[in-house]
Image (cartoon, rainbow over the protein chains, first blue to last red):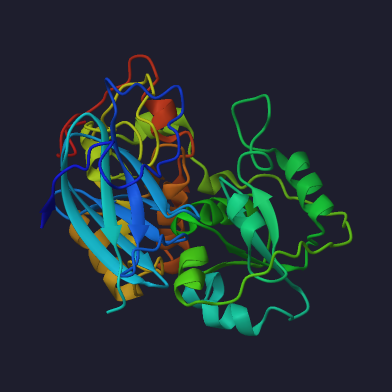
Length: 109
Length: 282
């Protein structure tokens, strides 16, 4: 499944933590968003991993108490996979240079 | 070394939180996780503030390591049980330091913080106070630490294992994707290095794969058991994880961690660099 980028200013509130001032969005490809459960509640403490187009592990972060995660990647196709006490979830995204916002849902198997 | 002596399960850890002679230590690059809740009774070590020299580009020396452990209340006879976030990267790095400075009994909790969290095991915010000790660190065991000249000489001679992600190996990314990609050094890898991302050695929940699975992974990647091995990554923490697998779990002899790793190598003048997904020629 491929999700379109959720542009800033869409219905979903921007819960992203501010980017460090040193980050050059002309060069960086940022994938950021939040993990929520089936009820739409933010899931903090979830482990979100970024897998490349071949399914290989690239990076992993823990979501903030507000459920936010962020990666610095490269343009192309990536898979996000979340593991948490509230369940697991997965999403494939196509991203471009700049900030790419995505929402990732988890549910108990 | 083997799995029995180097690793404990989260279950074992939870059952032994009160056992005398054990010191649980959380090691992280970012210790806010510890502050928000940690394994009950665990103390913390900050990888950057506590384990890196504040001035020289190096980690703490023998005297600094002894002072740190004395201040944290760790004795030479204590069994140190390490765990942390990032799939135990920094805990494995600390494990390597403890071995480098000759600590006898040190173990990792399999899966680290992630396994603990996913198992829904208990956390505590209480910070234990431990009486200071007078810890004695041994001279560094350089049989497990590689330096840059040795790495250059190892090209085409020893096993070089690059444990970064495939995109970092090929030169498409300069750093792990949870960090800004702003380093100025060159991208790529050390010629003849095998690409075996550290993550191949771990299950999704952060625990290590079985010895049989691990032996198969490195065998198929082309690791020559008759040669010495040097593992590297970007700053030496992920390669500590692989060093732990090869030396402590699989029991291979002569495995070194090159902690200077790509941050140093990719900034050296005149050394060879290979680009792309293949190891490249010596």
